[in-house]
Image (cartoon, rainbow, N blue to C red):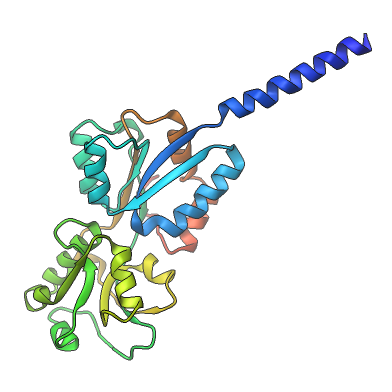
Length: 256
């Protein structure tokens, strides 16, 4: 009798072990470049707790959306603006029922950490004079969300026409951050969360929130995405994950 129970116990243990291994999944997340540090930390915690393997591809939201449209095998997309998520939803490439506004951010003007530049951002402020013959680093203002927000703000403040020819448009916001951190550009426009993770830059000033559209990060599972990606998305709205995002400077003012 004891032998029979012992064997049964061993079999149950094997079933649990193999069942747990089979349950682990691998899935792919396409995410805006500005999410890297905070999302990486949440991914590590989630993988440790579930055994799932998450592959994350970071780039500009515009580039990622186009890749998804072309058939790239993403399971979950986290964009840095609403328009590129709308773009995919209109093409029925996301599971609309899973879409949610996950995070919010702020836009800032940065300079190298050792710079003494001082600028007050207000209507008509003298950005062109401060730049002189130098360049302003920002993500591509015609396609990349951070660049579009920056351009919208500078237009609203009445200074875009004076500095547009001074702009160095980069492939994503992190590339603009690198230019300023290396001193290759004296000023740049990035998200507040980007400036927070780079010690070689400092925030000169913050752009008024009413000078550009709200910076919202929507997320959704792809139409063909794995269910495991949906579980991960759900986890990003829970207190532990939110605490990580908050640590990196993200905000939450919309329902998860």
